[in-house]
Length: 498
Ligand code: HEM
Image (tube, rainbow, N blue to C red; front, side):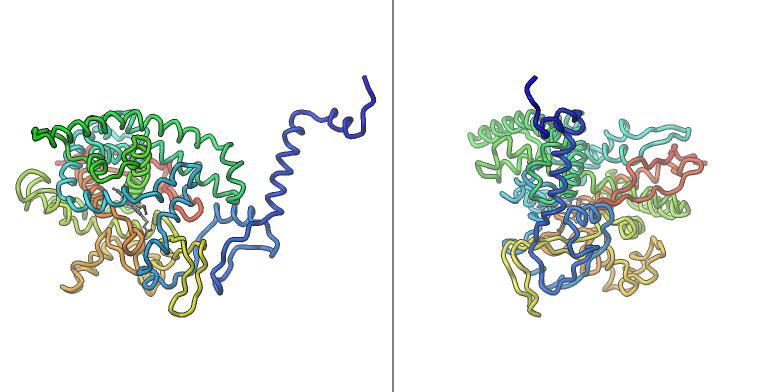
């Protein structure tokens, strides 16, 4: 054996752990040393640094696990700034891991926004009835109809119901009964959040390296391939139908959102890969948000069981007056659901205690802008509002610590001018749960309808409580996002009447 230099001797004495660990350690150390400077709004306070030289990685991780509030200002003025200057979608895409999670497609075109606004909401009564009919079918499969108490994972149960309703509206039959698509539409979001939160723990300039070590990213990729395999034949079918129709033939076809997107999309948007990625992203916007809201309401009801009676009385009253939902010309979903005023108010209060997000709306400045009072927002900066903090300010919500399910109901009934205000899904300066302005959640009215459809049925048919010795599961926080405990359980059985 030749002579070994001191360096060779050191290397020879190392095990595999050190050989891998030392370069990795050096890489992480370099992250601590080099802190990327983000554009700053002049005069905006800088929170969270413990030392002036604290590395970005540490402040970033502290934000990831412990973010709470930021100041709330300038909302009405910034609402009027066009999306070419202040972008909502850029903020969402950056939050979700942009090109590393294939969400960049949302910044390329807003077809996913337009279809919700111009088709789903424009024809809301029709789509609520479609959702109601699919719920009939899903009910028998997803809900345990037992006379005995049964323990259920609430979120899992509700997520599958919502996934079925969304699939029916977006893609129609048979995709809405395709278990592969239904599972994909749920898993896609979970993987997306996992990948995004992992990325967000690291400074953006490290993402090209870190991204390759995130298993959820590979699952996203696999699921997007599956989505394309499922959606491509649906697109082919619609193309054939459109050709026949153009040739004057009568064609029976479901009026799905996918078909509308094809008819209104350009060539690029109509590429199967592009379209299926967008469909998967739409499941992300629509399924988890809605099912988390239903789960939270059920948890809040189990924590205050006296409210089950109040809501059941309301349901009985409407049923006596209009008949069961969907049973006649006066009982269509569009007429029936708005009558659930107390449930509506309960939802708003539940959302105040369990917001989906602490900071909203969020925007990224694509161009620099100066506000009326001289505040300068440089291009590239991210701004948001402390929506949760603001809503819980006693000046906005008196005695905010009190869970008062009829708070909004009483506000509405306080005078005739207030009757059309304080409704679930409405956005205003004091309630930013669905965002604000032209870019606020386009799907919120559909979502409120779905939530009421599901809950009215559950509350009317079943009894719920927490398992022996258990209480309301605590919410979990990841950055500014709030989630109900994914393991949260309740027990349920068919209502014992008589
Ligand atoms: C309780 C349920 C839901 C909540 C809490 C919720 C909340 C939000 C929020 C806070 C935003 C951002 C708004 C802003 O920046 O001003 C948003 C955007 C959006 N939501 Fe919802 N949402 C819900 C349900 C739905 C449903 C059911 C759909 C579809 C049917 C949907 C589709 C969208 C879309 C397409 C966007 C815009 C994404 C973009 O900017 O490109 N949401 N939602």
